[in-house]
Image (cartoon, rainbow, N blue to C red):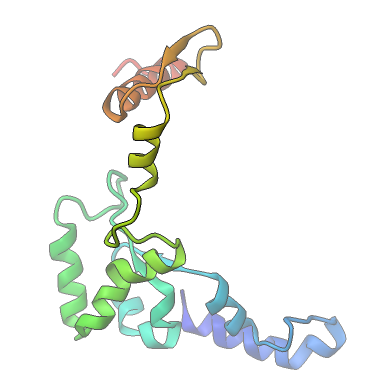
Length: 164
């Protein structure tokens, strides 16, 4: 996210909201943005440098594995280089690397509860018959995650004609 965009949105709003009848409930567009958007980056030296102008609570690092624009396999090292270059303190590193995402998605894997959704679902729900999205006639018991991904990959290849 470019801080210029936020600044420009506020300026445009202040100059034109009267005749365009824009109403953000008494808030500036940048305030609405910071309440409703989490921005992500893979490798962004300038974005990390300008993190406080963007809003440190609105930034999250994404590994984006296995996509071609990810930093894999050197993701942690490359991220550390960017964070070190910009002297990012530990509390901000924690926000960028996991705390912001946990807060935005109301997800806390570190606090014990009655079990995670996946764990609870596996313990409580018995396997059920499901229909494969690629073949209407195929019905199988719910497979485990590894088998499910292999089945998905095989069906995707068949659907697209990919023979790799």
